[in-house]
Image (spheres, rainbow, N blue to C red):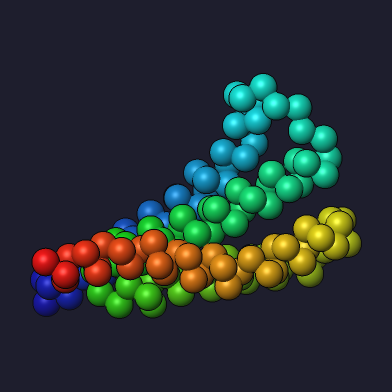
Length: 131
């Protein structure tokens, strides 16, 4: 029983850590331009936000996959499902407020977020078994 509780706790920590990674990376999009002295206009700001949204998704999936105690791809897919549902909800509710290139880029990036997140997060597993 203690091993099961340890696994559940580590799984929960991997998922919560992935959400924190998503939050940190996407919040960087708001303060990084001012720190670097960039004056971004509206289309450039949307592109910047889209890039950091995709990077945040990749980071979250990679974090969950990397730190999962078991079934790493399932952990990554679980976080990705939350991201996909959030993106779908955002497009449904706010899709008319954003240009079509932003909405299409957001939806088209979802498989990329999952694939790259799985790839990056799976690097630890491959390197640990190749020794």
